[in-house]
Length: 413
Image (cartoon, rainbow, N blue to C red; front, top):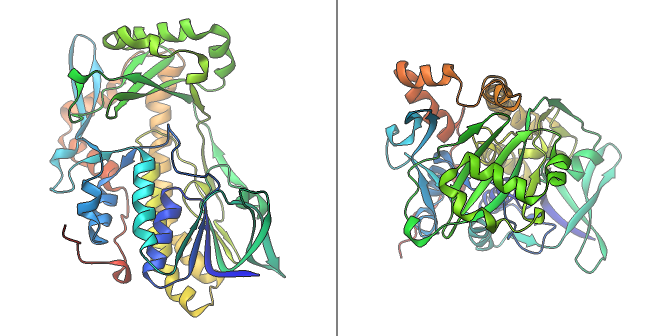
């Protein structure tokens, strides 16, 4: 029977960061990732300032900055007949943490995996799908998982951490049910080509709004990652209307991209995201802790989900590493981590719910085709808004710092 100190189920940002931090503490940690690699498109691309700072504290900043990336410096709202109004200018923050990095998530996850693999107590098992919890009496003592060849194995651990996303298998196996909040939209992700003449750093994001729909774009090396937002529950209607109608929608929202909408070759190019906003009432049971989307699925509004999940991982590593090294993780240890991270989660989700009500619901119901006047008023007339918004997005409430045991001096190349 296999054993480890901590088994982390899910190789997303929270899982890989937790694995790296615990391994640097000397904890025997195994991360199980169900896919064969990290190369899955249309996942969140934002690495926020608090995470960049954390990477510097880990001594990995130079290597991170060598990864292909662009810098988001502001978020603006379009105004009919006028210049876009900047709502959040990250350059107003103290350097060097005055931007949000945009990079493919697979590059970021491979970066974390490489750093963690340098630690002798770290193990990453790809193509390994957790299927069930192992229990002994009233305590979770490990997981059952299925390897790529179909064989089932059991991995015992002092602690199981679920970082397996908003559809968490372990959360369901533990009988933990989240409280769900209403979300007015879903998102359809797709690509559009980016011409050589358009290369360069990202200056900002300017979303496009219509009646009952919105569109945003993120720059990658040779293409745009586009997100089309429309009322929740209409995926079947969009697909019934056909690809030509969808192209027309995109061209109407972004006339400057109308010359390339034929690159959306079929409806198979649209990747539908069923947007959810929920939160567990309790994040743990004896022997199991849920963090990241497994504890609180986030809306794409504000793009802060990855940031919040990574902050969860830092707090979990800092709070649980001593207990894991002793081999005795108690429920009170898990409860302390939950208490520390619940407040930031509630704050962020409350802001997202307000954004849904004030910004997205009027657009999705066709009552408004542009940014709400209250946001434009704040941006134009309330100077504090220009300072609060970028800091909230870049760092979030209660940003975490790298634990002392995980810090390393920068490696000079």
